[in-house]
Image (tube, rainbow, N blue to C red; front, side, top):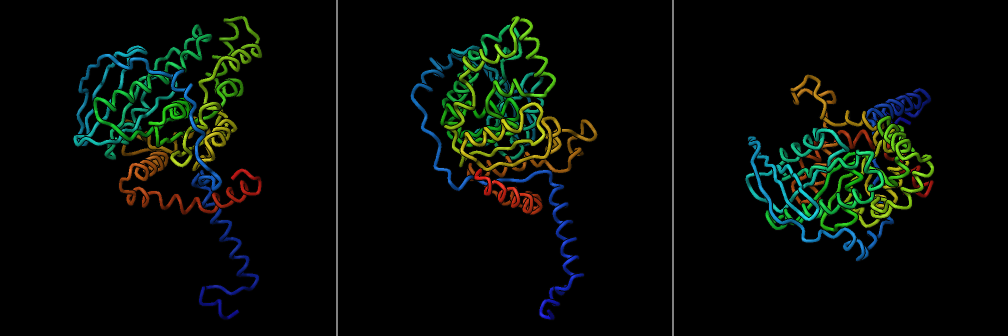
Length: 376
């Protein structure tokens, strides 16, 4: 036993107790990160090939006819312009965050459902500060209008077509060649849909997205979603079961049919265990359909996951003083894009190193569990 004393302990009962205590403390400290990660499935063989009918169903037609641009803001590192495009799918409004030096890369930030696009603007601004061009395609809020309920598939399909037209525009007018996406909540669901249809969307970060739109409507505990479902059923004088049956029959623009075409090797997925809006099971379903990509599981709800970002300043409007001291979601997304766009990863890797170290134990346990259950 003396041979172990140079390590600072000997293998007597008191030292074993000390090791147990240290182990518990390490586990507790690891748990404070509030998340763990699962790597890309080693059995992944690649995405399912897209059938030609997808390109036909989501055709851009004649794409766009004309556009106007107006610079709305200039900052030290980048500028912002609003682009209005007249297209076969109606008028598109795009906020474009661009660097002085042109590049081939563009990150599309997909907005959440409804409201002012403050969250998507925050992330677009963040990526622009890190040297990326970013764009937000404004969403048409027809989706929220109860009177449009019977047109839900048409609205979803039209949204994809508008995304594809925006890609056409940036390819032709700005020479963009490499596209990435970032989306949270409904934005994440849209990423899974549009990236499943258009192969140009190669590098995708999906945060709190899910699959099975009808199941999300049916099982969501989010008060706004539940209220919307109740009001639609009442307005159409339909039992909920009949309404959901109608949706399952008519909605095909859904990750459960399209996510299998997204390349898991080029995908980062983040889901929340206590999500009451997009249920955790829907996030796991999306992970399976993509092919078990690299996945980060946040110990948070749908709204509280914002505490893993620096979106909420502790002292508004001072962004430098935030409630959560680290922009974890932003860092993971940035590191992902740096890797896939072949930009330097040293700085982002160093900033993530403390998180990765603390995640080691819970991640190892999670991987062992998924291996035992055959879900790795």
